[in-house]
Image 1 (tube, helix red, strand yellow):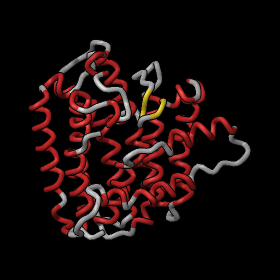
Image 2 (spheres, one colour):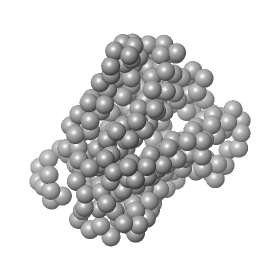
Image 3 (cartoon, rainbow, N blue to C red):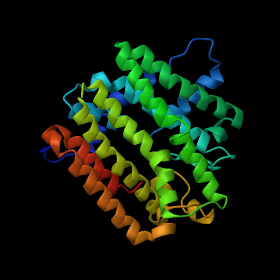
Image 4 (cartoon, rainbow, N blue to C red):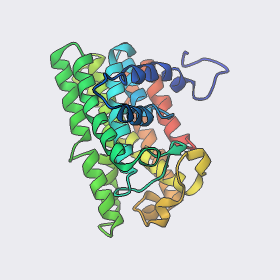
Length: 300
């Protein structure tokens, strides 16, 4: 589809990428007999669950924006979605956010059991890095990709953000700075890693990688602001998960700190900032610009 195409689905720029992403995910879930059947089933249940695939799409879109082919970036798209899926499986556990519904289906620990869910998450985390190492032919480039993704998934990013999120829920610091710090790591880091991985595999120079970083930082934050707002305004059917749970648990969210209207205005400012940061790529970045607006307009 071209950026000026006529009567098409409003999500066509994303929908066009889903067959590539899903084919890559399915191919990465073929295990030998050494992987127990129940574990393999839980891994596939978690990874192949229906979803928007925003993070792997960002990888492919960033690669496209810097002049690469999407096929070059597919290994990183798969790896990013593996890390995302693992984080959801673990975040949903009773010891974490204690959720029983994800993407309109029972969470992994409900569909299987807690131990199997933990092991499936463990396996997905390891698989992400294994997949990168096996699928990126240039060893130096593979090293750079592993470094980017491992940093985003580690204690100073995704895991650290979840730790502070849990601490805030238990009565810790409840300021805007703390909230931004949580989501810059818990949500934003993987958005930033996604576009950087796409840029790296598309052959981007340092200036282009910097522009992608400037796009991803506000976009990742905007995604979380919108997500927090949707907990107030959307429905369980639309979201595929429990609604109002954040409010009932006293969770630290943007509406709880800023109010709903100011939170929505913040999301708009962040998306504008993200879109402006990639003007340097011209028409090649049309999907990235579309995705930023999609994040702002999404209803689930």
